[in-house]
Amino acid sequence: MISRKILKIIGLQIVVTAVIGLALATLSSRDAAVSSVLGGSIGFLSGLSYAARSASSRGNTAKHWLQAQYAGERFKFVTTVILFSATFMLYRSLRLPEFFLTYIATLLVYFAALLMD
Image (cartoon, rainbow, N blue to C red; front, side, top):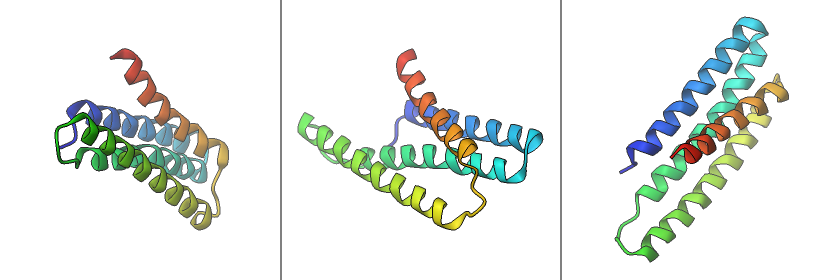
């Protein structure tokens, strides 16, 4: 089961993605907005994959917990690589500044939440 705290962080990442995407849709172009949403989606989907994989661990020893965290990180890395590759291959109108801006913004949400805890 994924903890409420992690779900809140992922929810905030989704909100940040939506806000930036809507702002760019209003102020810039469709390609900028779509690129932004794609970047943000990679940020929160990879985090969600980590949370789901690490939460699926069985056992309650420190060793089991650590193994679950490592497995979650590996799964997150693979998910991130696949999503980046698919985005670069399939969306030809990708605008890199908007894409990476929103991706980085979702990562900053995660780190800001850790600092405020």
